[in-house]
Picture 1: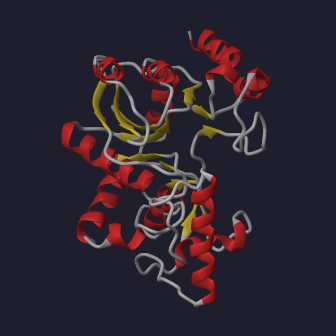
Picture 2 (picture 1 turned 30 degrees about the vertical axis):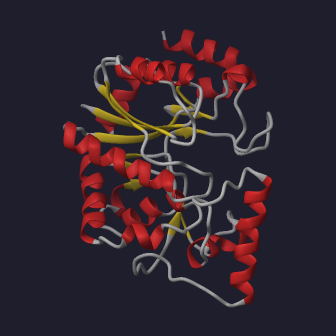
Length: 291
């Protein structure tokens, strides 16, 4: 069984190379580097020199909240489909770490072949502010402005407030009876990827429809797949160990050595979020356990 690992990264090439080397020859890697960050030619060349790295691209500037993360994921899927024949496709962050051996990873999908692994819940939901539908029904300018910068955040919020005052609304993409949300990190089959890419090809206006949707990567694939013939194949489990508490300056939490016991007994395959300066002892523990 062959796997395509679709990695979206924006910093820390050393950890990215460590992540890549956790996969053996049954796993091919396709990497998108955020264009906002300046990776050196030497760093990119080092990545490309790793035998199972099949493509390294830097197509989009990825701001938190904007649609470019989804666009990068879709482009990696398209490239992987052009370059190889894969049974499963896995979306992975550059701040992830594999917590099971490659053999255990493989065996999981051999035993569960044909199942789709992604988190999902219907919208509106109490998990998201105002049920989440405002993400789909307003114009959000996160591609144009960096919300992590104070001025960018203020402009985005001002434009959103103006839309509310003027009663400006947009239609949610597509025409689905139910919209779904969930994590953008998932593992889906080749057939399911084909279905999603065919939908995109047959709906050429889709990118303009979703360009201003807030955090569209947390809605797009869930909505397509849960409104498709693949619905009955979906398990509501994305196989990722994530702690959504605020810890180590971030939510989801930056994992540290205090997470090792939970990770040791977890049935998940991948963990996030990793910052080497904080997660160093956890990384060492997982590395020794994987062998």
